[in-house]
Amino acid sequence: MERKTEVLIIGGGVAGLAAGCYARMCGFQTLILEQHFLPGGLCTSWERDGYVFDGCISYLYGTAPGMPFNELWQELGLAGYGFIHRDEFIRVRNERGDEAVGWADPDVLYDHLVSIAPEDKKRIRDFTIAVKEFVDIDMSALTRQPRELMGPAAWGKLGLEMLPSVATTARWCRVSASDFAAGFKNPFLKEAIPHLLGWPEIPVLAAASTYAYLWKKNAGFPAGGSLAFARALEQRYLALGGRIEYRKRVERVLVENDRAVGARLYTDEDIRAEFVISAADGRSTVFEMLGGVYGRRSMKRRYGGDLPLHSQMQLSFGVNRDLSGTPAWIIHLLDPPYRLLSEERSVLSVKNFSFDPSLAPEGKSVVEVFLRMDYGYFRRLIGNRLYDSEQDQTAEQVLKVLERVMPGMSKDVEHTDVATPISYERYTGNWNGSSCGWLLTKKTMLSMILGMKKTLPGLDRFYMAGQWVEPGGSVPLCAASGKNAVALLCKDAGKTVPS
Image (cartoon, rainbow, N blue to C red; front, side, top):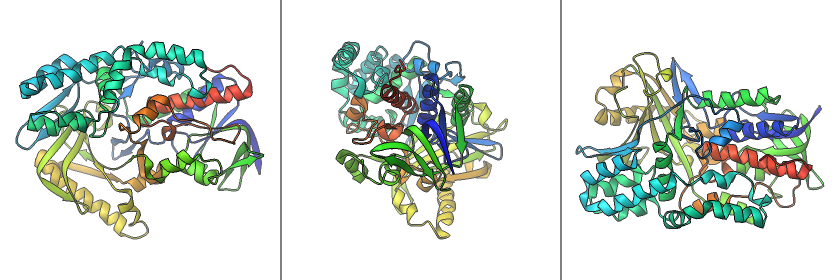
């Protein structure tokens, strides 16, 4: 059995849906194949007993008109989507009663942190100045067109546009939150800053931009959760005349004379196409769907452990308690540490989604705990009953730890849901269950700025999009990569590149 389309897109996540939208805007006939039965890929949520557990977006860049990345969502028909904004990003709290609040307003943040550590006034000022500088820096300029299509004039224009940010970028792109924290004198802030900025490995450059966008209401949470946002993008694609088929898993990309000509499904069905875009897992695409024939040496190094990943475990609790007065995100620094899965841990990341009342029944709340997790640990348990029992045991242990910071929580829990790195792999195909492709660190920051190629050497009419060609794996970057893949496609097809 064989069918045909002009543009075949593998993967119905944000990158695949965005690529589909832009391909339709350019007049191509499109078909998206998605292995799951839902759109969005990692941009998802799931409902259990009336509770909606969100698995993706903490904040989405581009939610304010005229601000960076907003044009992208306008083009995708989502500029009018409802977003929820908060005055604070995150809190860090220890069991001695010390607390640092990541206020979005840099002046409020400065006064607050200086009240904790006047001895670190200069270092605090350095960060809040960087936040203010980033308000006027349009990082989305780096995603407007693929680097492969940029000639000297385009590079010169981009250079002039980014000129005001050169000094700030040069100073902070190679400094991690942990590096920055090491220079603090105050013991509590020295421990808290790596988490207050997002995560210990995040470049200060990226943390400053996040705070800047939060301050200017350009980083909101999509009302209804991540899946609702993905469904809105899916509806935009369908309204443009695109087609999407679910529960369709690609076995391999069909190649003839070093040119992609379609895909074969695991059902032995062939779908022929003039162009193929893979917005699926990067490693599976290069080494399984294409057999490793067209992978660059650098790409083999990436998937050989050269670049960092982020695998995690998400424990979600439906709680019969109104937590609307509780902060949305608290990092608890615990002493003594707790033991979980044969590892001692001193950090507990707890999110409370009461800021969006649509995610839980009235008077109730959703609480989620995120733990960094070794993919291999759970991989070894697959195939026997230990996997399920280990999930149950982990949930029980985490609830005991939650009792230390949220007394009485256990008796109020009505539903518990556990997602391991294996869950991420099963439902999205992501290599090692990574939750964001390559983790954004000072090592991958330069690749994010310069961009990763979205074509493979020696293979024509084939393009890649998504988090595996966009370090950091944020939702806007994935959408922009879909647009850029279509720009490359348009060039090869002799059509006008989407602006």
